[in-house]
Length: 118
Image (cartoon, rainbow, N blue to C red):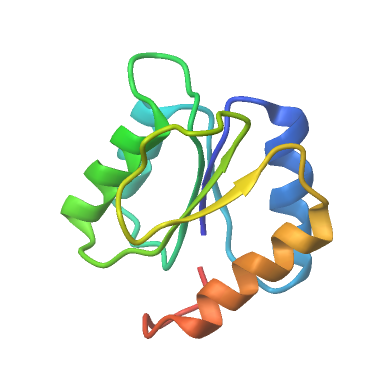
């Protein structure tokens, strides 16, 4: 799972919970860092905040990731209601219950046809 969120207080606990569930989690603080990770990794799922610093929002990260990995499932975590997002994605509002979001990630990973658990 590639997890992109500039708020360490949100990213850290979610990454830890996903690791407890057996996921390999790659963490990025912003879009440019996520793209650097995507140069050498092929995650099975992208979980990203919509509002990110340093020149790329979550939608742009998702579009760039899907150019590299067509069909990559995307889960947005956001406080921005009504933000236009790409088709075929899922959205969870912030604040979220950690276990509920972890279950959503598991469902997306197991529901998708992509190989691997990361």
